[in-house]
Length: 416
Ligand SMILES: O=C(O)[C@H]1O[C@H](OP(=O)(O)OP(=O)(O)OC[C@H]2O[C@@H](n3ccc(=O)[nH]c3=O)[C@H](O)[C@@H]2O)[C@H](O)[C@@H](O)[C@@H]1O
View (tube, protein in one colour):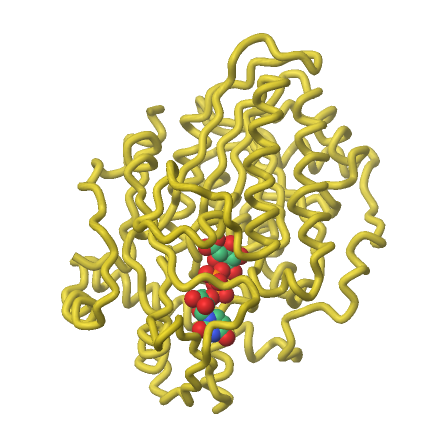
């Protein structure tokens, strides 16, 4: 492990098996970790962010009116002033720093990772297409936040090979943190093309440029807990089967893992996939349940709470953004160099996949209770059968591998 990770705590014991008994949850949720003050602080920060965005946003529909618009948009880039900004943003300002191209930098995770890298003196250049899957004003607000920290976000699409080539001409990036993606499980039934465009075509377009770059960067990218699909063995371990995706979203992330294998095998690219488990926190995504539940509870609208078969609990291994950021930095810091040059492999290169979860699944009904408590408003709960639109009944991460190899240790909202 590199020096940068030495601040992370030592590795805890392996997580136990997930049991769905309600009494166990209630019992354990009363014994919060000693970071109660931290948790309360962040809960208020998080609720504040949601409220600010909610009251600023005129739209109640987070989805775009015209999904095809994305691929038709053109972006302005290039020119000496633009190149100067690119270089300045990507300049390393600390000893042993790295220079990172962060795709999806105006996204939820991208913003936090970019800010964290910049804080420790790494060079960071963002790239984002500012699409309207959800209200782009939130992305613009994140961009303004990053700009204040000295991170420039280039406006453009990962499918634009000419732009990507130009970026690598201007900066010899040591790393790529690839977070640009079409997210969301349920939206895949409405707009399947957007998943293929971003998660498959876009990923290949990026890898094509990385393979030819000299030097080749090491790539860390966002896979998803959804690749476990209909897997019933818990907790989910990296060794478990991932050949039963329940949504097109999951299928495109699984495809990404196979594509990563190919580029590693043929071109010697160093590739690390991170399977994120339902990430939440400030600057979060309006299409996620915690966000629109909050909005709808405040509006007095009913909250659809999904149930598994026979009134079974639906639960998620919700993971706090700061923990995910530490996992991303751990992956970047332990990534070995790619081995190819001139588009040719010179030797075997690193190929890794890690779960980044919290190891404590929380039932969706408990999530609603937490929101009720913080908002001081009772939700109108509407229990519904889990729709057949890609959702899975539960997720639960085994994080032993990430603990061992990345120094990853989730600390927020952890129950002992
Ligand atoms: O772990 C992941 O990889 C995925 O996590 C989230 O997907 P999801 O877990 O479905 O998150 P939410 O959409 O916020 O749903 C959270 C929980 O609320 C439930 N839910 C959602 C919507 C609803 O109306 N009612 C309801 O009970 C879902 O079934 C789920 O159990 C993200 O949206 C995905 O982009 C990400 O890849």
